[in-house]
Image 1 (cartoon, rainbow, N blue to C red):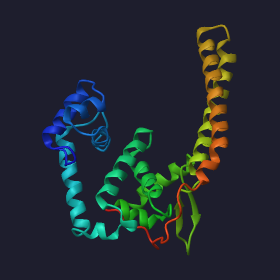
Image 2 (spheres, rainbow, N blue to C red; image 1 turned 60 degrees about the horizontal axis):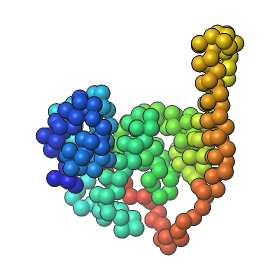
Image 3 (tube, rainbow, N blue to C red; image 1 turned 60 degrees about the vertical axis):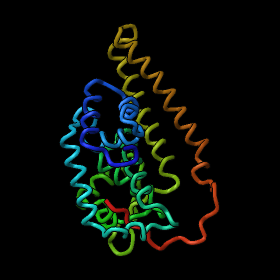
Image 4 (spheres, rainbow, N blue to C red; image 1 turned 180 degrees about the vertical axis):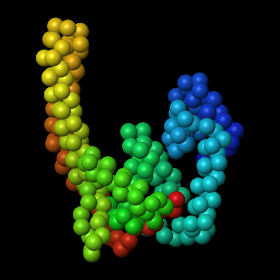
Length: 252
């Protein structure tokens, strides 16, 4: 039923819908489910080209079993700050992770990015990420290295030898600027290709058009990011009177 867990039959219908080339929204409509539920289900289980209903069902059962083992019943709700609904937080984090995956991040990169973004402090150590996501330190290190290269996270030295990983107010600005710079590099390469292939040839014309298009996109992206940067630092509501000393551990 809508709002409950997907059944094995529903997963089979999702697989059939993907095989027929249906959009997530259409599959969700036929199941009477939110589109985000279908999107999250597919992205967590191999993506649209590799989704298999039987494997997805078993994987979901394993995740549910691990969650039951990881935390006693009712413990997660007690740990949520500001009176948040624990189940709603967990569902939202899964949806947020799925959207990040659709933007091009791998599963682990998206999970780390979501975990950092949705903590109140925006700061976690490697050990805290390992505990929250129930993965190896190597997986965290690899994901952080990629996120840092894309301007989506940064690291700083914490107490002792521990590094802290941070998603702050400027991360999205830095990411947009990094994207603009990467696009500008493609512009340079395309312009170089025009000289090699000839400006009057089909390939040369194509490269010239690519360069003009991407140059415009790069400039507009950088300009818009600069103009909108102050939005990232604006406060839309008063800071809550009490900030817990440590974010609640989100169960996986």
